[in-house]
Image 1 (tube, rainbow, N blue to C red):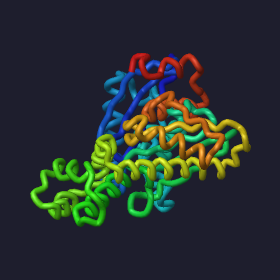
Image 2 (image 1 turned 180 degrees about the vertical axis):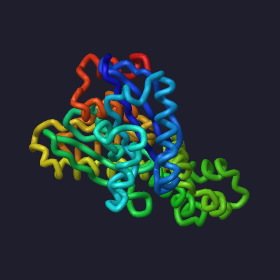
Image 3 (image 1 turned 120 degrees about the vertical axis):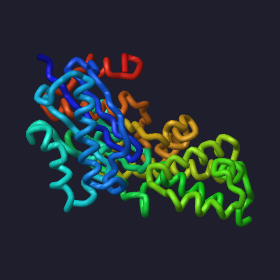
Image 4 (image 1 turned 90 degrees about the vertical axis):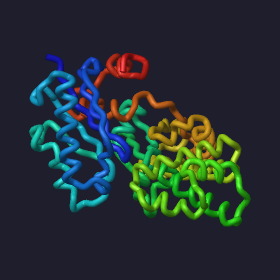
Length: 324
């Protein structure tokens, strides 16, 4: 029987579960809410993972002992060393210790966007981080959280966008389309009502979704919103530069840089300034469209950890447009 692999791609907004086989066939996929334990708590995370594994295995009509290996990439993994034993044991009730591994969700992005090849993956979703590998060496940059980090992320764009709104409301800067877009989104009768609208329900994942207001404003010609996107692109490029330095990437050797996360759904509005910023700080970087999504990358990485890396034909079968 062909070996089966389970991938779990955690995130600040959603968590995806996928079962694949050695040939790159997708047996099932399941999606649920955020797995950010700093937001939902460790008990809720444990329940979410258990329920998600049961759901995807039921959809695939396979038993737990048919899974050769499982990999779960979770947000904030590795950012509190005291919690590593507890995080590493989250799947222990489901799989033998030698058949699974827990890691940071940045690995899912790298394993998907670059199909496990050498290079760097930039993540700009609810938070931001960059991760890369070169000849087995690994490095990360960023991922310090929304309070004093996560530059260029959806949360960062939302926070900076609302700050720009406050300056417009005060008359500290000229009003642009962002002002009316924010007022309309929150149905504000008075500008200061924004404080109650945001502070009464500022859950990290929901707050980050407000980044789309900045994207909409930039498309409408708002100079402040456009400047924020330029800043975001510059910050994300610097994350890649930090990883390149840590990996000691050979000067002049082309460096594949790919990307994942909701911020990149804006397309050229974000990718064009990112490409320009990479040219400035990582001159040998080659911005590369993602080969696979992070949810697929998690399962691909599970196969790699099992010592059964997927071949080129299996990776091609998993690419968008090939049946998933």
